[in-house]
Image (cartoon, rainbow, N blue to C red; front, top):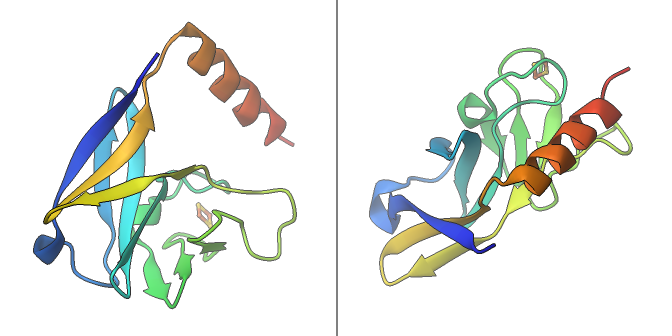
Length: 122
Ligand code: FES
């Protein structure tokens, strides 16, 4: 099963320090421009599902707008919360277009994501 290349927009339309929400195939991804480099992570905060795309960004850290969990945009790691990590997605710049590579949802992907979600409960 191949991945989908989801167009996020033109480089010049994705300003530094502000998140962009991308939706594809039922998945929500937050895309950030950090000093000219793009990073994409799952949009749902691991705490209570807050919108990471609306978080504030300082250097490589995004802060969830709801209760201020911090995430490293290079790794998805929840800072100070070992083992908690947002899924990261590859970003490709082709010309002046920015794309995020997202796996297509299939039965196997759905089961794997359900198991990942259950691992975070409790
Ligand atoms: S929902 Fe993100 S910190 Fe609570």
